Length: 326
Image (cartoon, rainbow, N blue to C red; front, top):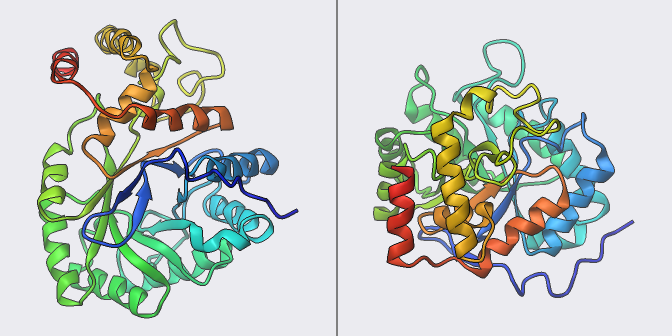
């Protein structure tokens, strides 16, 4: 059954210009790394996608290897696009990526023209789309000449398979080099996607570089895999990521020092009239174009969208945060 979107879906969300381009991105974007693959219940994933759109989230972030299993998140999104959102395609920003391992053999990963173009063709079939809005090179390739990767990205745009090009997990130096190569091929770099949160500030210099060069920025893991929520303030829930099989967030991550910081940040968030996750997202959004949230249920997405109700900080609050996370 075709979904009828809420008429007021654009009333509350904050939309921001992405770098020096005409593209506007929602402050909150939905990432489909987990919980949207063939190991999830399709109707549950569908509910989150459609609910997110009704909340004003127009940007859905995928990659060829998202699921699990690899590729299945794109398949899920393709089904929802076909059955529910086909009438709204031009209101959506669909992004995908290639670069991490996807299929056996020497062409199943990294940054060769062979891999990037073949991978995008596969992604388009799974998504049931003629083009994606943003195509990212997911990680730099230490072996393939960067000129070849740039050639592939430029060809993808010229062939109409993607409207914009992004990078992910590139260093400042690698980003600068790729920007030059793309400019030589008349393809501007739209956006860079990287890990960033209150508890992970290793990409501060990258953020500064992107701002100086009018390139959009989007942060993944802005809630530090769930640490910057109220999820672990009173222990480890049985159904949490830490209690499961995650290799990205383990019990070793919940050190006394880290949890003390989380507790102090939670108290500050309360004084602002926000939840900890809302404050953590607002803090990242003060420095980036958008943030990518993950979710296992629609209520989490709705809660995170409340972030846009208060995005500003006083100088005193920023000083308090700096002191806590130092």
